[in-house]
Length: 165
Image (cartoon, rainbow, N blue to C red; front, side):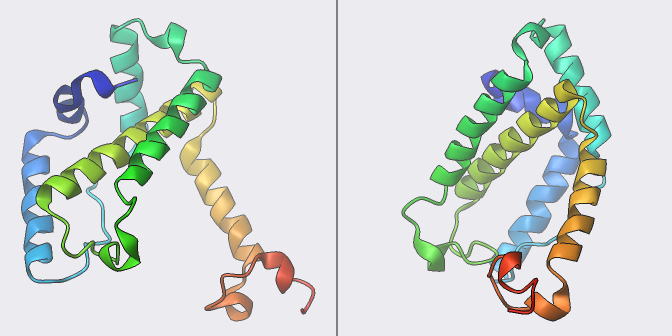
């Protein structure tokens, strides 16, 4: 989809100034031993990203290749590449904040995450799915399936406690 020119793609989706600020803030927290920040930049939002990806594909006449099936299969490949970033590292090396990861490792991880997000957003767009609305609805359903007072600290599936088990 957008793999051909990573640097060009990144510039379209995030202005240089925002990338530099993001890089500086994440490096500072890593050097001090803290876990990575759990906040995201305000832009682009998912609608802006959807529009940028649609424009990117349209400018290259790629809509013809972006069927939901093709995008879902490409997404699967990108998830595999994302998982490769963690392969063979062990749980200790993949603790929250990713202690010990180099800036190059973090950059590569971010690129793979971006690939996954972009394919997912493009898949939602080409499938006619309002992704933020679907996420909000799913989070609401998960809150009903996994009430905090009944599942706190448990990794069990909701069926193990839904009937008082």
